[in-house]
Length: 263
Image 1 (tube, helix red, strand yellow):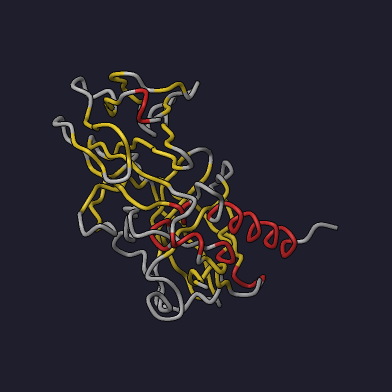
Image 2 (cartoon, rainbow, N blue to C red; image 1 turned 135 degrees about the vertical axis):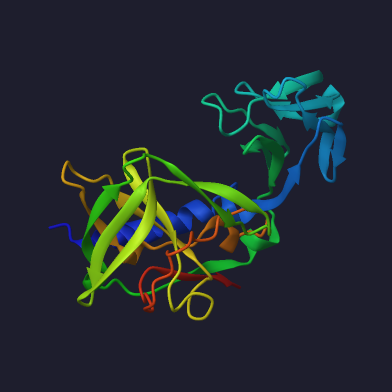
């Protein structure tokens, strides 16, 4: 019979495989912010800029430079506009083994470069994780904000402040004590950015949590065994949001992922 512990073990194995994949989070070696003026990016062919109409990222390259782009991965000959990751038909480019991903964040565009030979990936030795403990999986109730979405401004890992959309709060108990966390709703689930008394000491400075979508009465489950490290724990070029005000638990959550191990 399938148990929660067995499901959790499969989850940890999937996490390890995802972050250590050839173009997983550990492979990110740069996030290069762009403007309308074309620039060269070290180690990447072509000249890159924001498309004049704001539709994506524009690249100009010669066939001989070996850049392939778009869904068909055709050689770039001249200029081409690539749709960013926020577009339903996002496009990427390749140069050898490197994956080039246009991204858009709050109206700003950048090019991310993923390299399977990145030092972070080649020296990856796993993710330090607490053993599964059922007491860290608890019922929770989601209460949406009456006015719908709210936007709060939070610091990000790159030292800039950016808006974070939140849609309500979850209420739950740990060891008999009541707590709340601010979360957002997306793709039929809830997610949040949290810290606790272990953050920055026994665990990374903050973590993410994901909860199943609530039922009609707002009921869901908060499983802190699946509290997971943000992308910026794996590569410094990610721009993860820090927890919003009130999302630091006063207790040490000794569950979930702790830190990235380097070999």
